[in-house]
Length: 326
Ligand SMILES: Nc1ncnc2c1ncn2[C@@H]1O[C@H](COP(=O)(O)OP(=O)(O)OP(=O)(O)O)[C@@H](O)[C@H]1O
Image (cartoon, rainbow, N blue to C red; front, side, top):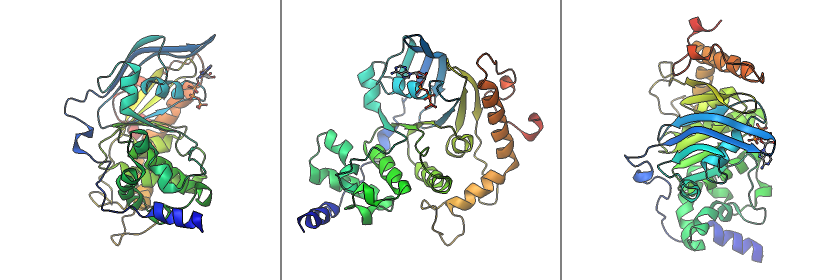
C-alpha cells in the first residue's frame, strides 16, 4: 500500500507546470554550431579517428554512419567533453574546453539506462534534480513532456513494466528534459525490433520538428539517418575519417506536403497524414531511394580499410539524383 501511495503521489505534480524544454533562446542568434577540425584520437596502438573535419550548423541534424568500430562513439564523446582529442580543434556553440562542451550537450545512449527502482516520472526528472531542483519542482517541470509523449498515464510505473519502445521514449524524454541545446543520440533505437524502431523513428522525427536543437545522430541504419537528419556524413573504416557528406532534402513535394504530421505514430489524426504515411511516402520517393543508394554505396566503399571514396565528390554538399546513381 505504501508503495502504491508513493507512486500515486509521484504521478500527480501539484500545480500547473511551465514548459521546461522549449525556451526560445535554446539556439541563440550567435550560435556558431559545432566545429571539428583535424580531430585525431588514439587508444594505445589503436588509432580510432584521424583528421576529422566536420561542421554542424546550429539547429540542424547531422547523421553519422560508418562501419563498426570506426570511431563514431569516440567522436560523440569528444564533442560532449567526456574525452579529449590528441590533436585538432573542437568548438561546441563556442565552447572549446571540455566542461563548456559538456554543459551544452545531452547524450542518449543505445541502452535506455533507466534506473529500475525509480518510476517513469522519477527517471524523467533526474537531469533537473542534477541541476539542483527539488523533487516537486522537477516533477512539475517535466510533467508537460510526459503528457506530450503519451507517458503521463505511466508516470508511476517502474521501467520493467514498460515496453522497449516506451522505455526509449522515456530515455529520449529524459535527454530533452536536460534542456541542453545539443543532443547526441548514439544508436538510440539500435536495441529495438524493426517495427518498434520504425514507430520510434516516426515519433522522433515528428518530435524534433519545432525543437530548436542541434542533433548528432550515430546510427548503422542509413534509412534512419536519412529520415531523421538534414545531412548525413559517412565515415571510413578505422581510423575513421569523414569520406562523404550528403544533404537530405525535405522531400516535401509529395502527397503529404504541407500537411501537419501526427506525433503519435500509430494513431490516426483525422486528416490521414500520420507520421507513418509520411514515412511510407518518403521511402517510396525515387529521390529518397537514389539518395539512400548513394549513401549505401559510399558506406560500402568506406568499409574497405584503404578504400578512397573516389565517387564521393559527385555527391559532396549536394543531393544525389536518380541520374547520378548507377
Ligand atoms: N576507452 C577506450 N579504450 C581503448 N580503446 C577504445 C576506447 N574507446 C574506443 N576504443 C577503440 O576505438 C575504436 C573506435 O571505437 P568506437 O566505439 O568509437 O567505434 P564505433 O564506430 O562507435 O563502433 P560501433 O559502431 O561498433 O559502436 C575501436 O577500435 C575501439 O575498440
